[in-house]
Image (cartoon, rainbow, N blue to C red; front, top):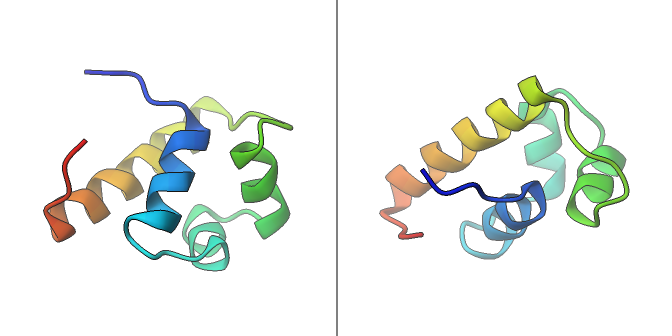
Length: 68
Protein backbone atom coordinates (compact mmCIF):
# COMPACT_ATOMS: atom_id res chain seq x y z
CA UNK A 1 0.00 0.00 0.00
CA UNK A 2 1.35 3.40 -1.01
CA UNK A 3 1.96 5.87 1.80
CA UNK A 4 0.09 9.10 1.26
CA UNK A 5 0.89 12.23 3.25
CA UNK A 6 -1.89 13.76 5.39
CA UNK A 7 -1.63 16.94 3.31
CA UNK A 8 -2.43 15.01 0.15
CA UNK A 9 -5.33 13.15 1.76
CA UNK A 10 -6.91 16.38 3.04
CA UNK A 11 -6.40 18.13 -0.30
CA UNK A 12 -8.01 15.20 -2.14
CA UNK A 13 -10.97 15.10 0.24
CA UNK A 14 -11.56 18.82 -0.26
CA UNK A 15 -10.88 19.06 -4.00
CA UNK A 16 -12.02 15.68 -5.36
CA UNK A 17 -14.86 14.85 -3.02
CA UNK A 18 -16.05 18.30 -1.95
CA UNK A 19 -15.82 17.65 1.79
CA UNK A 20 -15.33 20.84 3.79
CA UNK A 21 -12.65 21.23 6.44
CA UNK A 22 -15.45 21.78 8.96
CA UNK A 23 -17.08 18.45 8.13
CA UNK A 24 -13.73 16.66 8.16
CA UNK A 25 -12.85 18.22 11.51
CA UNK A 26 -16.18 17.04 12.93
CA UNK A 27 -15.61 13.50 11.69
CA UNK A 28 -12.09 13.56 13.14
CA UNK A 29 -13.04 15.12 16.47
CA UNK A 30 -10.59 17.99 16.01
CA UNK A 31 -10.85 21.69 15.15
CA UNK A 32 -10.74 23.19 11.67
CA UNK A 33 -7.50 24.89 12.74
CA UNK A 34 -6.00 21.43 13.33
CA UNK A 35 -7.05 20.32 9.83
CA UNK A 36 -5.46 23.49 8.41
CA UNK A 37 -2.24 22.80 10.33
CA UNK A 38 -2.08 19.24 9.02
CA UNK A 39 -2.81 20.34 5.46
CA UNK A 40 -0.04 22.93 5.49
CA UNK A 41 2.48 20.80 7.44
CA UNK A 42 2.45 23.01 10.53
CA UNK A 43 1.81 19.94 12.72
CA UNK A 44 1.36 16.22 12.14
CA UNK A 45 -1.56 14.01 13.15
CA UNK A 46 -0.99 11.26 15.69
CA UNK A 47 -0.91 7.67 14.47
CA UNK A 48 -4.53 7.18 15.55
CA UNK A 49 -5.62 10.41 13.81
CA UNK A 50 -3.76 9.43 10.65
CA UNK A 51 -5.42 6.01 10.70
CA UNK A 52 -8.87 7.65 11.02
CA UNK A 53 -8.04 10.13 8.25
CA UNK A 54 -7.14 7.23 5.97
CA UNK A 55 -10.38 5.41 6.84
CA UNK A 56 -12.41 8.52 6.00
CA UNK A 57 -10.54 8.92 2.72
CA UNK A 58 -11.05 5.28 1.74
CA UNK A 59 -14.75 5.61 2.55
CA UNK A 60 -15.19 8.61 0.27
CA UNK A 61 -13.03 7.02 -2.40
CA UNK A 62 -15.11 3.83 -2.46
CA UNK A 63 -18.43 5.74 -2.43
CA UNK A 64 -17.44 8.02 -5.29
CA UNK A 65 -15.50 5.39 -7.24
CA UNK A 66 -12.42 7.58 -7.18
CA UNK A 67 -9.04 6.37 -8.27
CA UNK A 68 -5.66 7.02 -6.66
